[in-house]
Image (cartoon, rainbow, N blue to C red; front, side, top):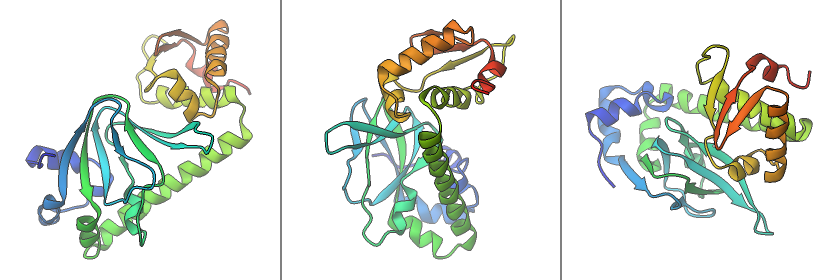
Length: 231
């Protein structure tokens, strides 16, 4: 693990959890922050492990997942750079990770130890509200996902996921180029779709002229048609 410098502090403060911190607060938190690297396939933590820190991803992608009693893997989230995770666990009396985290690519992330951040929160009402807002947004996201899993069919779940990726890209001559953030079998698990079903839906969208697929790269030819899909 490596310590952080001035540039890394600026990077941290782009995230809403750290944006409200003044120079003195960042200095107080500095000894509790480090940088960690993982190689593709390495685990950051495993389900049930004591949670002593939360994380903010700098580079790469992290897969958060759980294993069913049958051994089947269910991907809960694919974490992308700039996003934090596991921060809500610091408020538990005996914090433990409820899922596992594995690097999908080579990864670099900030490690923020819970004890130091809790000490900071005890003296900053404003930062407490920022953390509460973050947890509320995460909760809303989970509720939306439950709705999607129970109320939407597989095609709509995939279409909405593609639209989520589209909104982060610029439209060029009516088309949008997007790249799936992980292998198709991982995306399928994230959306609770069988891999062969995902491939069939992508092919169907292609046959309708909405998209074309080459590996993990997808060209959305008709963004508006995708948005009104199923209406």
